[in-house]
Image 1 (spheres, rainbow, N blue to C red):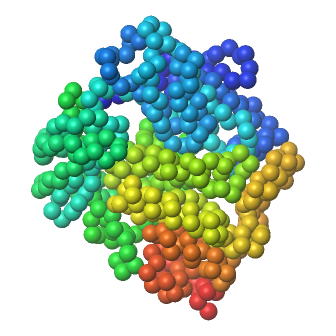
Image 2: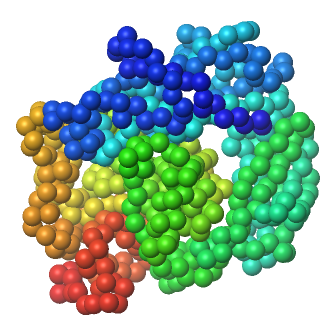
Image 3: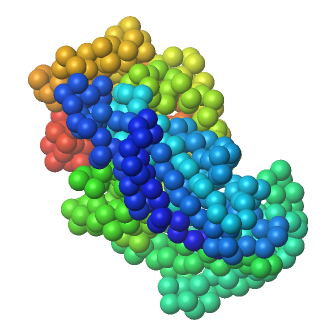
Length: 527
């Protein structure tokens, strides 16, 4: 695959106006152009920006694309916020609703001889649709991908550590046609560590598949202290793909905890949103690496993406610097947290979205776990428990090497079961009505209330017996139970559910010392 940056030569303007187009370079966050207003429907969550729809335009010549007859020509968008519509010469060629995942647009059949006009619509005027600063537009890189007719499928190379002790890895390659695949593993200096060839000829509905295992005796393992990386070079006919990977395994159980390469690791993590402060939502590699380096220097070894899939640049930084990653799919499910959020689409789109997530993450040794949601009080309901199970099992089918969790606010589940849910469709509607009146509803109201009543308010609420009743169904069908603000339940629940693995997916700093042995707090659930 010839993968070429496609980030320059773009023009941008608000879609609803005849304003003059302005030249921009991708990544670009158009929300920073929007006016600020005290009446902004999203209020403080968007930084008081009144978000709009934007139109991006790029002219390119067919002569600038080095391709032959039969070549496959794709555009890879790493992230467009949101409800993206891609047109080439006026024809709709791709649509993508979720603003935090990447996607491909196939140009192959639509490129005209001579000048071509590519347009990207980003629809973000329906507000509020997010509980934090989202940004607007093409805020992550764009790539032009050209590959021959006989090619390796996009995201078609996967490397799996089979046994860290013997340094055995498996390489899976999907190709458009049957044929011989050549594989080389290179170290950081480009020296060959292993090479082999095998036949791609197993049809599985997604192309032809090659699966081969090999032992690389001299390979050095990847971990947080020594993040050793290698490059897998795959050749198929005239096509080539390169994937950076690390040799490591992930395991977790109730007896030995979380382990990398058999060694127990205590996760010292934080929840990290995707924006870069004054740079907005743009995913600049240097800015992403700076965040990781600062956190690593501060003693962190793990990050949870809050509350959406992170950028490829951030994953690359995690791999290089030895940071562990819990990549999260989405903030909410079918109960709206804001009026125009992704809740309407989740049940219809989650399979495609999770496949996109795994395709992005699979070869990154830093990614240790998937999270399917954040504070989704749907997990207190039979419908939500069934969705938890469906997402978990679907992820297992896509990637059997990583456990699945979900960040469940234990207290919120109890409140939801009492008809007092922090998130409801009705409250999402009221958020719009109150936006200009400076009244808080939903999570903003609850956050203010918790701030007034203190940290113990959330922690004590989670110890109430009904919190157990309204979470155990969902926790039983995920690999790792994600506890949001449930720190006082750990000892009690580990006794009651001896086979439950728990991760503190979100916590207040106050009280964490008790779990780490720096103090003693007794849970109401223990008394």
